[in-house]
Length: 365
Image: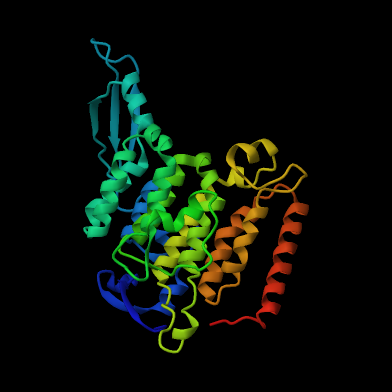
């Protein structure tokens, strides 16, 4: 299963429109969780890369798109309406078009309440025609019509996203029941036996929407990071439970899809990026208000993230370990002092060394 082939776009300039078969190993080498750089430059122009550029990097100029710049003309016309001059670049003879532009407080207020999550949800609904995504869309659509409504229904939105992120292994075409992940959504105890989950037809779209939700919520996403979002992705998606001992000889563990793993780490990177201020905060007030795990003794709020290091940085797949390092590295670099950074890294190395010693040295690819 390691050498299975998938269709991907050939980025060779000599054959831009040609489809070739790419192995999982080759695709794993091109994966990246660095969301601070252009995604297109690394993997080429794809649908996912274009969607990320438009949402998270709107100021990045697109290749082949005509550059435009607007210049306001003061004074307006006889009716008092303001005009905007639209200068089209890219040619020697620049044409100027006068566009009537009315600036009203009502339009500004309406644009301020718009949600990027709602537009991305509608776009995903047009591109994903599966029955499962249709059910997901009908369930979450009424809660996302405005940013204020999304903040009011934040608990339900996060719960719906996590339910449709993965499907039970016994029924891959269905979503996860909310009772099965109640321990992530509330203070209820975790079940003794872990449930095996698999990716479905909406996993990559839901992961993209989680990153968009973090963009809209900003610091409001903080109370869902440690107890809800990260455990669901790290443990249920990236580290599924092994098959039962009675069936280990009959059934092997399902391999991880490289594209899903990359989308998962990129979603986590965007969540950490938009919530970095609170993740690195050391204030007791922010801990009590947003549910962080830091302390007021000079330590940083990044310490609760250490519980997920062993399941990602010590993963048996090398590309998972590399993507995890790219995901956590920006947070470690942004620690306020060199002593806090060195102390955090020493603790991580000791924990990984102890984990490797306990498992007999670990296994690699």
